Image 1 (tube, rainbow, N blue to C red):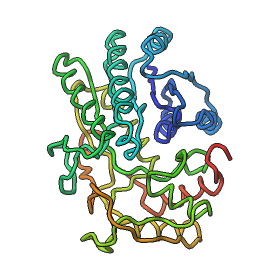
Image 2: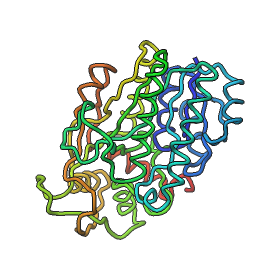
Image 3: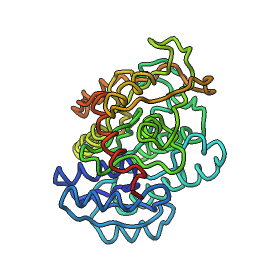
Length: 337
């Protein structure tokens, strides 16, 4: 069975492509490279010693998608493609709704046309809004504070409606938490354009000397050290979770929302200390006021993933930082290095 991976050149997409190939699957890569580099897929081919079909295509391009489905016997789709910067989504919400929501609808229509009804969707824990941790899949969703998160919620609702209309679909909605780290080779990793939106690449860039200090937003939360706590998951564990989800949708009909997280919370200071240990560098930081909408603690209840997918993470914060440092130190300017 061939598996179409949209957004395949991105951070999580490239790591999932690598693990799919290592597991003997036949993935097909699709990306428009708007926020990714073709170099990532070249490195995936080199690391695995396997070649695969790569299409430069936008999910808004219906004709382009249909051509890919005509050329291949696609049995399932892993859907990563989408704009993902929370701050940017507040500035240009219409672009996020057009790309993420409309693009996804076009993709689902093409899948339906070619009778491909097995889907793993890249959702997000942001859809839980201001619920109290640990987040459980049965919690109410939709109280989202930014357009990016709202697109994920809307797409989930579209997929629930799609399954209600046609229960021959098999859909896994993977709500993941905070992916960090890189492949242990240091050859593929997170390569944000401009100033990083996420904590770990920012810490890594301070460690490698690209930035002066880390801004720690909020030092007065009711956590063990006053800084915000998040559920960081190694990107390789996350990629392996997608393999478990593909196995699940192959064998089951239905629609399930499933958390992918460790169930453990690490604070900003925990992450900084772990990166200092991994890099051997002192990481400067400044405590700044809290950001509007940020929660003190965000972490998963991962029991459903273990029960349904037989999936459990195996890499802790130390390994996450070791691999993030291997990537950053070998590639100080990302894929441009």
